Image (cartoon, rainbow, N blue to C red; front, side, top):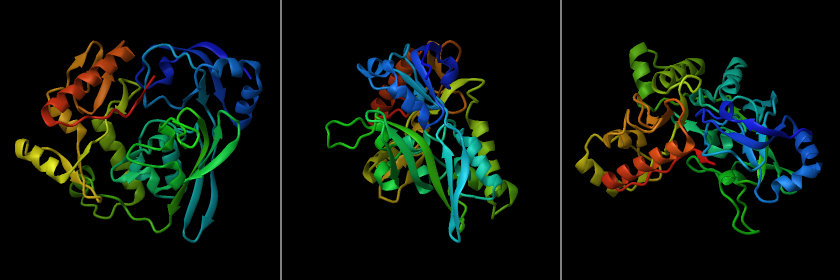
Amino acid sequence: MIVEKQVPLQGYNSFGIVAKAHHLARIRDEADLAALRACAPWDELTRVAAPFVLGGGSNLVITGDVRPLVLKVEIAGRRLVEETPKGWLVEAGAGENWHAFVQWTLEQGWPGLENLALIPGTVGASPVQNIGAYGVELQDRFHSLDAIDLRTGETFTLDAGQCGFGYRDSVFKHVPTDARDFGLGGRALITRVRFWLPKAWKPVLGYADLERKIAETGNTAPDARTIFDWICGIRRAKLPDPAVIGNAGSFFKNPTVTPDQCADIIARDPKVVHYPMPDGTVKLAAGWLIDACGWKGRGVGNAGVYDKQALVLVNRGGATGGEVVTLAKAIQTSVYERFGIRLEPEPVVI
């Protein structure tokens, strides 16, 4: 098993931040990780810090050269595990590109993931973040996943309940505090993910952007492929292509507040974009809050707020991770001072 040294990471993070991994190993199957763990350098490289698992690098801010051992997940493969009268169970390797996987399922005639089109990153990272868009979250389609315990080398399988899904959250984002804690942050490498796609498919259209598409086209009953095409068009119009402008997509989570808090904000800012949630809370549009504080188009150094969508921070050319973090903290301060709301970043900062 080859462990590469001083590997440039600029092409492995969608922000395009310049940094290096002191040591990097490419994991293309389970045997690669087993071979790596059997090598003498494993204990030496993991003694001080747990390995850092890297997928597509689309939800990452690198603030300097990475000292922990980087495990670059490149496990490929897509397959239909099972078809029943009720639906399809499909599986993808953790290193598969998420958008390409969504497109492939639709090409096979298996709808259900179309609202999650064009989300950057890999399949293996999708349950970590519990990705979501346009009314659908990964947990709505998730079946199970396989992973390897980096401490013991043992394989295990988790279902949706065991993944502890929350809003842009899962058990994989929490570091265990004691032996009884099931937090898997820094402890697990996901190898394969399975999704359940029901044959009793229903379109999810309850977002303003999709309602506008219905009004524009007159198509009141779009099929899954049409929804996929609509969402691709909407996202391309709103969000910068990381291949052109470095970014990590939506940088902050949409905060939730109580109805009383929302009413207080509406009294001061009647145009605030908000969405009532099934649990009685109200979700606020983080992008609107940031824009209301005057941040759209502004920046710190070479890091800036995208001029078409305030929720996206971008690399204007040569930005450092420190500049991105400084900008993010300045935005958090502005939003808290005006609205009393603390924005929570989505990307991992390393």
